[in-house]
Length: 77
Image (cartoon, rainbow, N blue to C red; front, side):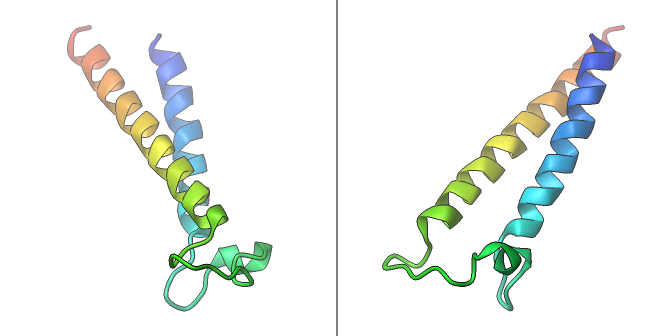
């Protein structure tokens, strides 16, 4: 079980890094490379940005749960 959680932690960490780098910052970002800078919006962010936000939050929650699970597993073993 510990190995599964460690692999999940590494995978979620890498995906989370990638998702954070894709976000558009003040001066652009890596999302501009994939067409993120071309989008026009009414509410301040496009549908793609909102979906990217949702994926990032979901991945962050999964990463956090994995860290807590590994901590509990190592504390009680």
